Structure formats: C-alpha cells, structure tokens
Amino acid sequence: TILSKATPQRLASYASSSSSNQETNTELYRHIQNMLQDVSLMKEILLADGPKGQNYVNFLRIYHQICSTSLHTTKHCSSTDSSVEFNMFDRLALAVALEHANPMTIFDTNTSIDPVARYAQYEGAYLRGELDPFFPTLSTWKLRMVVNNDASDDEIQWCRNMLCNYRPDHILDRNDAWRYCMIVRSDVDYKRPVWKEGCPRTY
Image 1: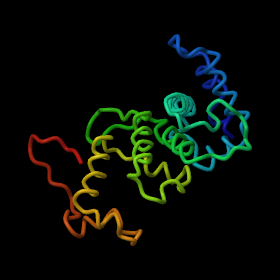
Image 2: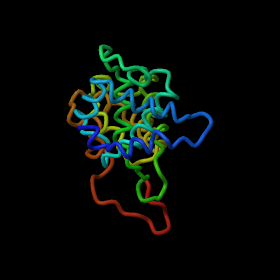
Image 3: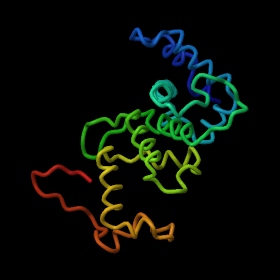
C-alpha cells in the first residue's frame, strides 16, 4: 500500500535529491530502506492515515529532519527493529511529519509553518510540564489533530501561558469536554471575529 501510494519513481527521486554535504544520497536511500523494511513503522503510518496529500517524499524529509535534531526520537529513525514500541516523542515526530507533509501556512498569511520548529514547540512544552497529563497517551492520529493548528508557534505558546496565568482554574477543571474551551463561556465571547481595519488578522 505504501509503495503504491508513494510510487517508486517519487521515492527514487527523493533518494537522489541530496543538495548538501550534510545529506548524502546514501543517507536518503537509507531513509526509504528503513521505512520499507520496518513493519511496525509502516503500520503506524497507515493507521494514522498516511501523509497529507500522500506526499511521502516530504514526509520522509521532515521525519528525518526531526529525528536528527531531537534527542528524544529514537524509534525507527535509523533502525528497523520492529520489536521496540513507539514512545510519545516518536508518535509526535510522526504526527508532525505526516500532517505537515503538505506545507501549512499561518492563518491569513503566506508564511509557512516550519514542521521541525512545530515539533520542537510541543516537545519543549511537554518537557517543561506545560501539557495535559493525557498528552503522552495520545495516538499518532490524535497527535495529528494537535499539531495541525494554523496559529504560529508564538501564538500557541502565548495561549498556553495566558491560560496558566489568567485562568488556571480552567486548566484544572476536570470536565474534559470543556477544560480548554470554558474561556469562551467565561471571558471571550464565541462569535464571528471582528477585525479592525489595518490590523493584522491574528489569533
């Protein structure tokens, strides 16, 4: 299934697309080989609905860029040992690479979201204890629904800080359905936004 959707032609093009001294064609070929020889990685990719737009080439590029910059993603980045389970960081890396395989832009701008920076945003927040206790239990598919936010990384961090400082009671609310949404009932009206003329349309 993966090979038919990724197509041998596109994978071959990726394997020969090295444009820097840091990334050789041999390394790019190894990325493809690792994926196609790792049953549990391919299963995880398919269970998470595959790369956005079936863009396996960009998925591989992003996934291995994340692996090369993070100290916490170890599973399947350079190994094909299917016996080792995915940890939370592995699922997060996969989620970002799958969801951002087709480039996303920040809301109402032409500015592209950097998927490696998006991963680092959530990795850092998790390590600082800023995320929900349930976060490490989320599947790769559910993590895709977290990292596909079209806000900038700075806006995501601002929102997190704002809730902690302004309404920490909402974060501690045990009503899971409203824990992060209650502010639209208490402080911020849930309505169609009104933009001031000449002001940027941001979150």
